[in-house]
Image (tube, rainbow, N blue to C red):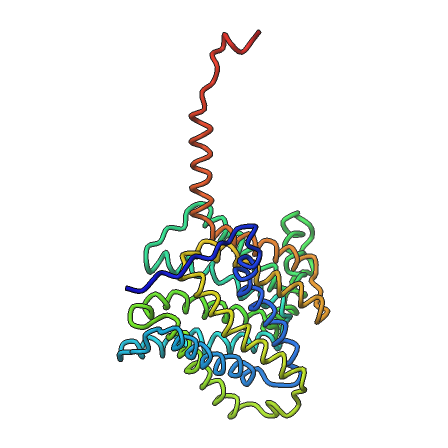
Length: 348
């Protein structure tokens, strides 16, 4: 019988515990900034492959050192292959293409809206309840993502129309902006978010046949190989213009943004801290927005800022819907059962 690893004390006094807890979200957010900073000197598909394959080997090495089971049946390989296609090749490929066309901060906001899609798919596939707070979060998420991705003039003209202002001449700018939508990185990021959401739902089946950490390592390797193949066929000058700083940024995105962040994430997940992890999902785009502004000079419009705020609130509501609902129920029960003084005692 193996001894259960000691729980990490995540109290305010254990500052190093809190640092470890938020580190995956810090790494994922800042890795977006690191990848964005190198795209002027490399190509998207090549960069996506570099982030996956080396990290996959590191995860497998860590799993072997930790004594995790490496045995895989044909069903396990089949699910890992599907997981690699969706959450590896498609997700990282779409993400890199989106980063080439949009900012790291806005891209991270769109990517991390995937819990909204996960909630809907889990409701459809597994019958999981969403609840009133969840539906409110989904509505806010739709409004937030629309504000982030749609051209500002569309949003502002929509408010003008709602206020019964003249719509004359408004159709032409909308038509002009339509082409800008498809040339922006928002739709690539949205496809990446949907790929990640499908992969998140798939991991439940993958874990039935394989150790989740081992499956994660193999899905990175298998998912990165097609990206390298597509890069060789479709892209040129993948690494020739990369500087020493660029290689450092790529190493950071690979080592910390993939391998280390997944390792720490599974470390806490194995100790039952899933609630804490899900509550901190919104930190990833916050870190990406802050560091994107500091290092890349990315600036949001007022409409985009409002959309970011709505999206972050929606992610929190969807992730924490059960905990918030039960807390409100307890407060209501406590309030409704509080004894009141008789009327005769209310006046002196």
